[in-house]
Length: 602
Image (cartoon, rainbow, N blue to C red; front, side):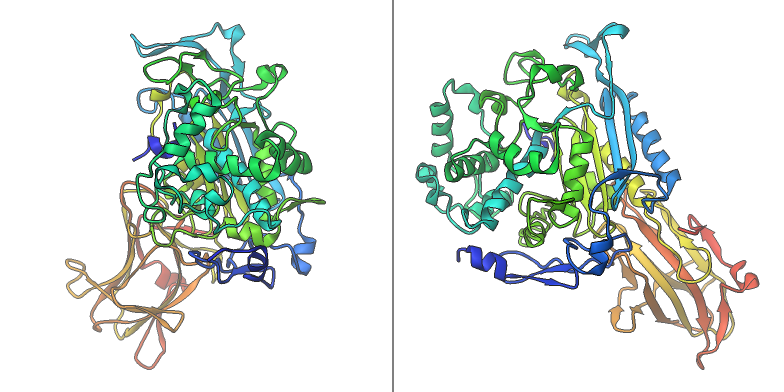
């Protein structure tokens, strides 16, 4: 079962290298079929540029992890504390059952891990009682608490490892991104799959349906026959449909072209070079006391009757494939995943080890699914997904989730990373729904990255609450003809606009006011929203009349939010350009009416 199922010309090695230009420490993609460019992020974090592996600034950056304070990481401690307290709330009914029995939370920025906190239990239940919909709790002395080093079944986060291994082979020239899968697996072409490409496997645009019960076939040959004969649900390249079968197929390609098993590839190419000592398929029995239990797997909610799964892969198909599968089966811990996160944010290197070139990492973080808005996807990585990335989601934010309750989010713009590992199918998968704990954690980490005012010590902040309207109203000032200020916004695209409005009747009715940002970009509807690059923008707006009130209004829907909106340096000018109102003057600033907006230094 996948997380997505649970929720509603050939690029040669020469072209691969030649189509990517490193410019000033950022990475620019060019001439890659189906891909949109990843511009150099305009971030504020240390080494914020994706793939910043060159230049003096990159040389000075720390490329390995250390533990440190929030301040050392350039984060705000109060919001990291809130991240933990919010996560702990989901150990209680939320709303009916706990979302997870426990979790390990890890958050950092740059080379500093500022938060690494276990909560709850790694093993709490011995079974699930379907008649009473309750978990059969172990005696207190037999339960195992979460620790920082608890190992988790990553479920679909495993797909990232398979994808990295594939991109390594592309980089080395052994695998072609735009090649047909049948070039490596001739039997794959059955059922009308002869035109599916490697890229379509990596971006879930192959046409495969989400999954099929391979575990029902007792032999490996039978399982492969089901895959060879599978008929696509959609013509290749015509739609996005997340599917485990894509990564299982990619596993078979990798094993064919390298003559090594996927478990060996994982060890030799990723975990051993990076020192990820608790990352592997099929953990040995000696690890069992360190592993979080998953589900009491029994029919009808599970495809197999296995009892409480603990130390073996939860996914039925991965289990039937011997625990080694391209879509699921990797076990790991938070610190190991932090090493992987730091490696990718470093542009493919960690300390003296390099597993990918900066150009290869850039491709993994590049949207190849521009034809399918809302389903942005790089090579293996999901991009810009608010449903679990929360306010960390930007066009450059990459990550993945796992059905067992795991997730990894990387934000190159702020150089921040977040790992939430929960055992949310313990004792049964039906106890959890949605991704509220992941969103809450991501919102708090996003808020922990400060936004500094452009003038003075504070600016106006809209907050990050959902289903709210916040207004910031300037007073009526005789002779005012134009507004000037600075604006910073990062909101849920298409859902949470910030609007400039005017009223000529004392605030009874309001109309939109068109404005210009940065002296060149016009906003005729008087609204902006979505991603603005984590930079301040200058605003200029002619007033529709001299007898008007002016306000900024930020409205959010009930679902997700971005990092919010900041306004700074509010001034009203007369027709001659003279300042008639300046919020920096205490008497003027006191006349601003703020509903839902607060003064914030960060």
